[in-house]
Image 1: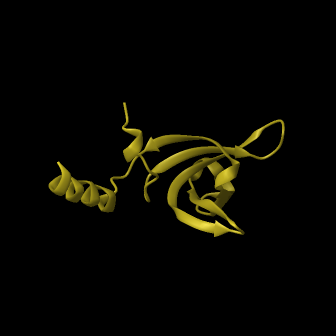
Image 2: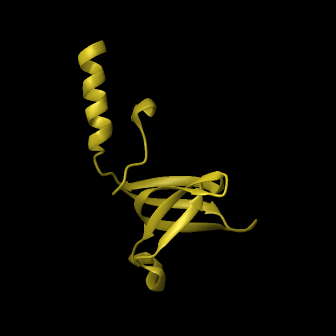
Length: 94
């Protein structure tokens, strides 16, 4: 089981995100996480769409965080910055 306190979205990881599109169906976005951005007063997720999106492949989709219904981790890239902070903390507190 994943330690929830240590889970975060990492740049370079591949995700499938279901977000609100309409009342009847979600918008499914699949691709590589590029980072966060501001969308008005909200935070948003930036996802580079993969080949499953055919003509939109390679485009960046900005999804407001409050619109996300579910997020599947397809492949996780190692977050070096997070790992370094975790190792540093264990030196002082572990």
